[in-house]
Image (tube, rainbow, N blue to C red):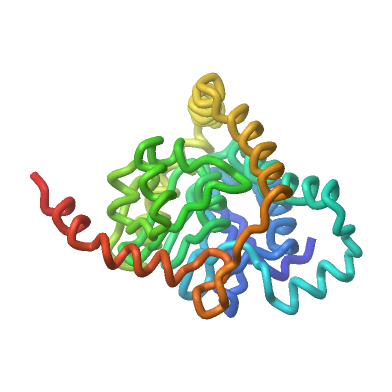
Length: 281
């Protein structure tokens, strides 16, 4: 496959780089198809021991592409039906099925996050085994399409953040268990992520069964606790809900469907509490 919206770099540590920096790596249909192909290629490549997902430009990903002319033209060319059944099927395939498939790639995966990680960006990161972030990373969760937020940060914290609708800082995400490691800037993030990924890749290449068993056994433990089954049920409820109500969309100056302006305002209002939390103990 020829890649247009991602960059794929094979190697001991393979790289999948979201490559629409002009749009803050908004997730086009083409991007998700290319990612799916790249993960499959890396999985089958015996020389690859670890996969790192990152974003080109200033941000990891600002979420789904819901408004660019490029995406609109692509959808038109595909002649995708607009009826409810096809919409259900398309969203399920692109958000649920893709994400679960990437979660279960046999090789270790790491999301390297900087800048915005909004809605669909959270979905991409959540589907990886590990998340390393720079201090400037801002995570904005949405409990739609791929419903991992309670698993990512805990159920009470998920309610707190989702009810208020605000950005989660990198250090918060570390405290809540969403992020594994935080580094002071993007240079350090890349250096340390790839240093760690090289060690993981060495372990995979030396004994792939051991690493693969560790990954799949942890994923299976989560599934026994209801992870995949609950995501499936949540998707059915979500889609039914989208058909019985009109979802209000903020104006463009509010930051699109993710209401970035509101999430930023709420983060500012919570900063005194966040500072106290950082200084505790």
